[in-house]
Amino acid sequence: MTSLPRTTLVLGGARSGKSAYAERLIRAAAPLATYLATAEAGDGEMSERIAHHRAARGAGWVTIEEPLELVGTLRRVALADRPVLVDCLTLWLSNLMHAERDIAAETAALAACFAGLAGPVVLVSNEVGQGIVPDNALARAFRDHAGRLHQTVAAAADQVVFVTAGLPMLLKSAEVRFVK
Image (cartoon, rainbow, N blue to C red; front, side, top):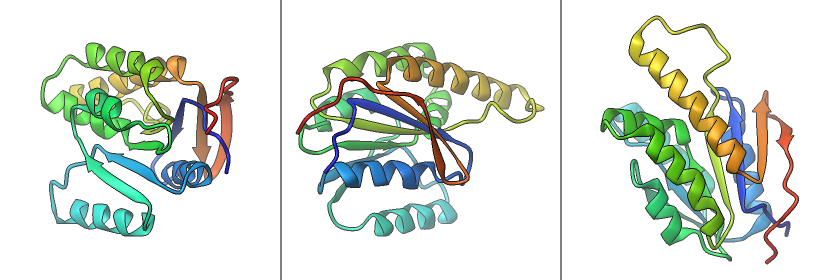
């Protein structure tokens, strides 16, 4: 088994392999893990995606669905012997925007909670700022919030990995690691 840094941020574009990479990190570190899902099944296609991902993870994973209260949930479920995979921050951001929450305050609270967690956390998020400028105000606001979210979380994280075409690129390396 390998040890995990306290916090790892895994970024990548759509279908880049970021979630699969994050799951491999968790599996290499512990036989039991918590999957903290921020997605909500708003339609049949999304329900199918969620069911497929849950079945693919298999035994050893406890799934918790939490679209908004990420910080409180992390504080409750991040255990020394059970790492947490949060998938994904950009869906959480969408949920926060829809609920008209204070994005800056929620982002700051998330970054601040990392130091007090009892176990390692791997956070997955979609990099959306490398494409064209969106043509509407809501999409531009989302892109801007996502960029600030990623900068804040990356600064607070021990390790940051960018995944493209299934290949991980280490952007920030952890020096202090959790030891089991």
